[in-house]
Length: 145
Image (cartoon, rainbow, N blue to C red; front, top):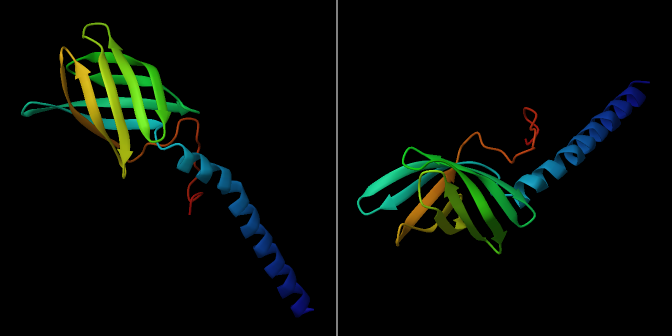
């Protein structure tokens, strides 16, 4: 009888572990397949100064949408955004600032690239905020292990 109970308990534990792994696999794949969606701390480098900003990006297939904000530019919206073969391109439009053309790529855990505005080109980079997650993803505590 004890052997039967122990065997049943082992089977239940194995099934629970298997279903838990299956339930989190699509979420893991979505997070791995979508390195862009979320909130990013951005630095624009102009001459000897650094201007901070925030990007909120959303990846849908190869299309990138989102918003931006900095004290210098105010709020902005992203248009013509694309992500293909590790290359990011989009334009930021603002109410009170000239548009900014952005190009970049993912390098490790950072986005790096160049921006063009007001007749000059300079560098920028961004790091995803620690609590950022892909838009639309709900992560239960300990769901990812």
